[in-house]
Image (cartoon, rainbow, N blue to C red; front, side):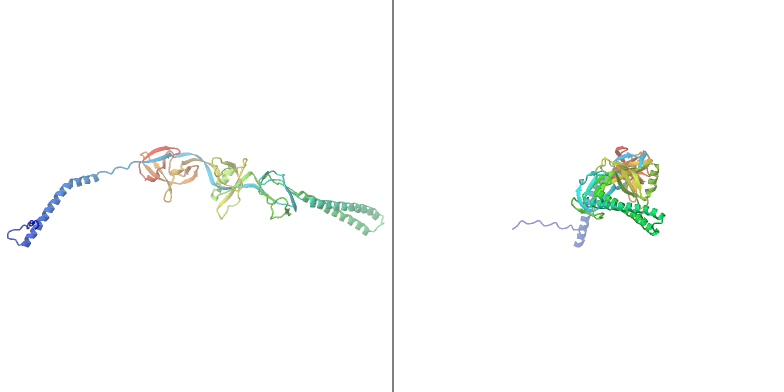
Length: 403
């Protein structure tokens, strides 16, 4: 047999109570003991709760200052410069064509060669034109001989008419013949000159000093006189050279004022050569504003002595119109863009920042020229904007005029 189990203790009973009443009393006693235990536990935890409540009532710890870079607002004279993109153009472009037809006997230059005005470029077969010239000269000599005889006849008939030995009709006929031959001789002289000119056109010379392009008609081909479709070669004059560009029409008054004061300097920067700008002069302002774009077309002339500028290039153009005295200047990186406006953070004497709305007039070589919003000598934040709010404390890790 297994071990006998001890009988469970019967629930406490009270004399004079019914069994169900006795169970209710026992449950009540059990709940009372649980409530007493819970109260004791709360008493033990109460000091800790009071301690936590006391820590929350203390003042919050101030955040550390934000490290920033800063620069001083400067007031100085800066040039009034307008910047845009320009296109380099040859100062003169000539498409060389043949004025007479014939075989192209010889080409006297290489493609891309520098040629000077008057240099021989092409030779067209001159023999047909030489023959035409000799023919015209022969016809002129014949008609000159006939004219001489006609003049002699006219002089003889003039004496005979005075003696009434011939009729007036005969005299008038001889005179008319002499006059007609005079006109014929003049026409022959013009024909000789035309034939001589065509013979001269057989040698084609450069009309300008410049650089030749690709050879479009090669030696041995037959060329036609004044053929609009067949260009022999194109020559670009690149010394001097032009840069064409456009500016908004609202700058027209400033451009005209600058021209009235003297030559207007234009600077061009070739892509990849920002440290080697080239300088020229404004030479042309178009007589009308382009209504489609609201821009004005201008040209500047550059000596191009080192041939760095090349037709077809795109370059950065800066037009200096005047000097702007007492301009407020800050580093360009100090200006931030917010919702609908631009702003800077200035640093107060208490090392806090203030929000200042500003208007940028223009940018110039990493600097922003402001229309107002700051004062000379104030400090503006140039780096560290992301962690700033108005009134935030800052510490300047470096400062200066350039930020």
